[in-house]
Image (spheres, rainbow, N blue to C red):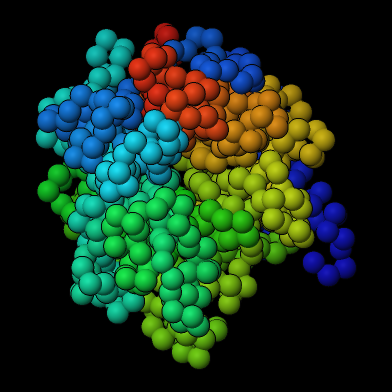
Length: 611
């Protein structure tokens, strides 16, 4: 950046009409579309009003149905939900709390069926103040912790479209709950390492549970990747002073937010100092094979995982894009050693155990992917990286050493099915004091979205495994006062983008997470937005759905034909309590607290969502 003021660089990077001027091979792939054709937005709906309300709202011409709510049956022997008499055993058979990532998997496997399929849903975390009367004080800590552990992980249900409405199949052989106590295999370079061994698992190869599951992805071979994000929040107890694990815990910001250690010794670091190293991984689940164990894939690194989006490079290798959802953390990519064979899914069950993990470093013109390989750069014995397992267990520290670019909370990362360009959602960063070229605002309240452009491979298709990409700032979120750069004719203001997805036509859909503080500060509800990524109306935002007060929306997911959009509505009523909720969405019954739910959105005429 020598010789150019940072303000000039920012102006260049956020221009909607910028043509990238990267190195020769990048230039053709990275040119932004021309505005000359005068086309209007491809999205035909008119935005819903942006106002806070106890109820949700949807654009005209659309309808939404509640598909499944916290406490609804997942397994056929589940008890009827009673919020006043919860138990861990009951919750382990019911739909969990705070639903996040959603993955639709057509039935049968390998088909494009848009009327029958499996739905995997993450359960990220629990909220005692809205789950239990008087913040759970009426329950003994072991009972409360048992309920909360069972409300974590994920749910798998079978669903079918009948007469325009989705139904959960009550007796499905695929139905499954994964919780904080489910047995899970550990694979890849860190499996069996001494730093993963505990009293309960002296082999270091068999974990119990998955927690903090936020975003994720689907693989070309029909499995689900669920990302352990907030797992650092669950550990109490003190580690030895000056120990390596103490420094490791500090870098991961390990803390006790839920008090599980009083009921489960696994979460007391004084008794099990290595247990924390068995979380914050990517977990792979085969939804089509109910008897298979989930697997923690350690080759993909250990950090505060948000996304796990899989694309295939021109040479057939799998590429997984991942974000580390923390202020001033990093963007990662994993490239498999072997090639994808979508025709033989079982043969590629271990594909993500061998490959190379990279971290992103941005400069004025390019993004460079830096390999995180033991023995390279500073990732050597003298710095504590004796093996590749150490690099993977302490991925954040490894990325620090290679001078990756600190980002503004990288959350979801998705690739366009039409152009192959990759979009990185950066939610906010109130801790940023100095801008950098990829994060151009200090004290970034509203967040922004980057557009990464892989170069063309020998076949002309985007090469996601290439070492260098071009890049651009797709938009800066916020209002005019904050320097927002969305299209000036946008119908809604965007704040704190979180998850994103593409529909079959290649439009970008953006879900937001402002928290109740952000909602009150802006007066905007969280919701779901959409925009084109090409043409003169590129980044012209429209808002399809507004969530109830306190709620964020997560995990937008389309059926293959684009006629149904599934959406997770998380923590409705945030900032209020079970006894005095700000909303009782979606039931609006005095006997029910607010309940996180998955909804199905469809056009009333049955056409594709968005038009």
